[in-house]
Length: 201
Image (cartoon, rainbow, N blue to C red; front, side):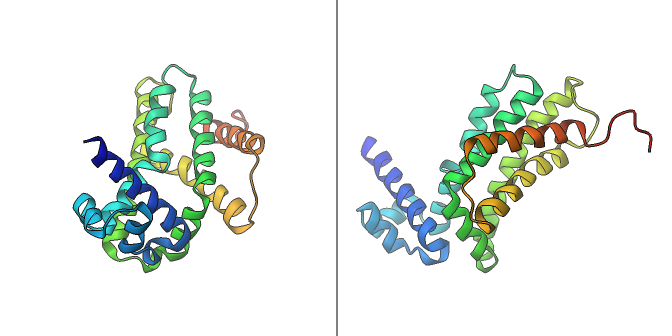
C-alpha cells in the first residue's frame, strides 16, 4: 500500500515539474512516467488519463489544500487577521508555482474543453471555500448582507491579478514584506472601501 502511494506521489511530482517546464500540452505521459521512473502503463493504471493527473496536481500542489487547512486555522481570528493570513498565503503559493501559472495562462485557450473544465472546477472550488468562510461571517452579523460568492471572487481574483501583473508581466520577485504590506492594504480596502463612511457625496 505504501509503495502504491509512493508511486502516485512520484507521478504527481513529475507531472508538476513537466507542466511547469513544458505546459500541459507539451508534457507527454511517456515523459511523465520516465521522470517518475515508472512505466507508462503504471501511470495509466493509477490515473487513467493525463487530465486526471493534471487535476490531481491542481488539487494537491496548489493553494487549494493550503486554503482548506488555513480556513480551519483562522477560526477564532479577527476577520481582518484571517483575511490577511489567507491573502498572504495565496500570493506566496502563487510565487512558488510561478512557472506553472505562467505557462497555464499562456496556453489555456488551446486546452481541450475537458481540461479547461478541470481547471475551472479547481478555481470554483477555491472560490467556494472562501465563500463559505465569508458566509459564516455574514451569518454572525460581521459582514453586510452582500453576496458572499461575489465577495469571494473579488478577493481571490484581485490578488491573483496583482500577482500576474507584478510577477508574470513585469517579472518582479515580490519580497515577503511587500506581499504582506500589499495584502494588508487590500484587505483594508476590501473590508472598508475607499470612501470615508460619513461622506455623503
